[in-house]
Length: 137
View: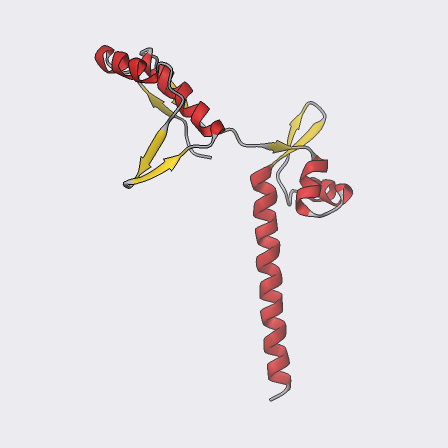
């Protein structure tokens, strides 16, 4: 996860100009490398909120929130049984956090595990193909 970024409030003149620009406007257009991007509603709302806070001279912190999954959600995402997943967390193969007595697993941990499985399968397939080629020589 990326560390939070803290941006101090804008100077008064800049804050007033930004506040004036935001009045009665919901059209937020972003230019990235000279290319225009129209933001989807959720992103637009987040950007407008950020800009509104800056326009009031507030210091703003931007950070990410990593999604935590229940063991059932994580098992479904991984395509494995709930019991198998719990056994993997017990063995420490997938990190788990506890909220009271309930296990929670970071979505990123499941995605990383899936990537590891995919690489392992590709390596096994390559090894099998080499053995097949060697036996026909």
